[in-house]
Image (cartoon, rainbow, N blue to C red; front, side, top):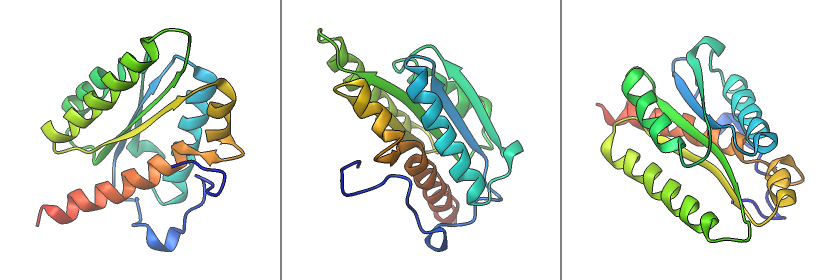
Length: 165
């Protein structure tokens, strides 16, 4: 969780499994692309830093955060050799309840995918009150939630591998 006391980009590689044998999918919302591209870059760079091979990372784009659910589901179905999928989005509070409906729907949808499939989906959707909060968490003063999501994806890929035995 991003707070003023925790930088999301800090991790200890010695405590993270090597990602060289894992395959990752990343589904990125095009809405608020200034934010989602920063999150993607944080995730992509962290995966490579932890040993993932560039060719083992698949990226798909979807129009908005609500569409992440369908994109992740289709990615799980299309690439059964994936070890984890990262859902990247950004929803910023506006003047209507639309924010609440989108945030709730995406949260529940990603949760449902984790229950229904054997491929873990990592929730990397910022739900901020304003654009500055999103900037701070997508490469700004609080680091990058995308980096944190990549580390979670590696750990969950390892858990999935270990749980098969």
